[in-house]
Length: 246
Image (cartoon, rainbow, N blue to C red):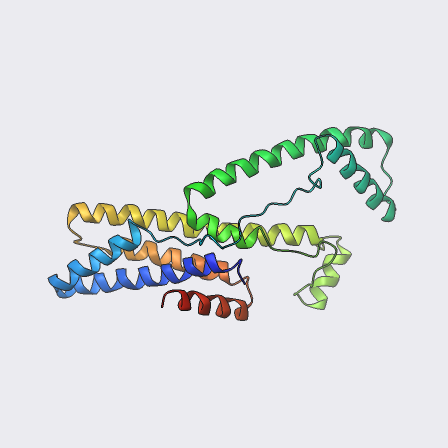
């Protein structure tokens, strides 16, 4: 549950901020100046001085090392031996030359992974929304040996005949890619909404339809991100967040 709390705070924040922007649009339409000023100030507090979504007691982003945190080269050799063992169990024959070069390929893959981790850490430092959602996704535990196929028996049989049935690794990668896609939608739409709000402050809030639209995009993105998570977990996390705000 604790891993989901930062994301739940983001979700509550997006719903509150979107509702406030929609209220502002209606007030502008009705010309209620006093309420308009108060609503703009509330939105300023929400968008310009955004609240923190991560508490000091919350878990952190965790990215496991596929090489068992072993030193360079030692980890790659251990990984190559593991791959060789798996191939043997699956009765897959690989010549000596590919095995010889495999360690070198793994060294390159590890360097590339380390670059990706550093780049993502930098992006997380620049966006607390991104870090809040990553706290949950980077701490997920998947069964890398099996998964439950959700399609029909006919579809599964067809994929097996065509040798296109995805592996557990394929499914995990697809799942995480989709979560990251929606996370990016949330982050981008919210950043654009903040920029739009600052612009509207300069021009006097004559039309906030773009602001409302961007916040709705962010809200839709967070809904889709949460769609991967069991409803009971979401309800429990939201209840904790509501208790925090009282």
